[in-house]
Amino acid sequence: MEWIAMALAALLAGFVDAIVGGGGLVMLPALFAAFAQAPAATLLGTNKATSVWGTAMATWNYSRRVPLRWSAMAPAAVAAFLAAWAGAWAVTLVPGDTLRRLLPLVLLAVLLYTLSKKELGRQHAPRFSGNKEAICASLIGAGIGFYDGFFGPGTGSFFIFLLVRVLGYDFLNASVSAKLLNFASNVAAILLFAGKGHVWWPLALTLGAANVLGSLLGTHLALRHGAGFVRGVFIAVVGVLICKTGWDAFLR
Image 1 (cartoon, rainbow, N blue to C red):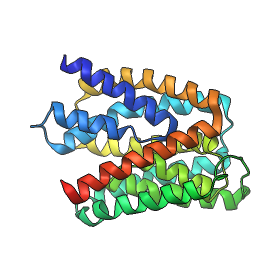
Image 2: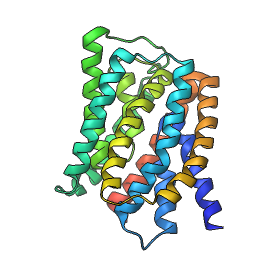
Image 3: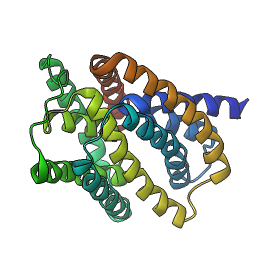
Image 4: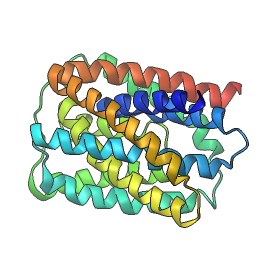
């Protein structure tokens, strides 16, 4: 019964992740509830090793239907990978308590800004091209990649918001690009966790299959309904993130 519940959680996490990110809201609480005595690092590593398969599948499926701006996203993915590795290393040296308390406030600002700009992310109108776009995308990849390695909650939502706000992408194209960047940062974290023996591979691979199924469904709906649908899910997920991170930071 426990494995069935975990598989359903992995499927839902893959579904949410494929659209706007935030699958960790589902998967991590499920892992911590099911394996309360396990080391936190092992559960974090297993979560990353579970979700990376759905993220990879979503990246592949999106890229077949929505053209990725590879000239900008390839260097951004490299930046995200390197920064996530640095962030995962830094978290072993610096406590994340301050960031934990700041996160819900930052997410609230993102939500209010998105709600106030009714047309934000509805039209795909990239502001930059060439080297300028690659540099801006790489800065986004590095900044949020470091955050993903250091802390993590809301990484996909932050990627999407900045790609929309800074680069002028619509929510659908931003979601596609965010998948690639999030995949790169996830791989970096997995390598670090796995190198320290903090991944339960049999569990991660089993749940990864369910995660892929959820990812396929989420990708299908996002491609079918477009930027407006992704924007709506983005607002909902950020709202839940605010509640979850606010509870963890101030009330738990």
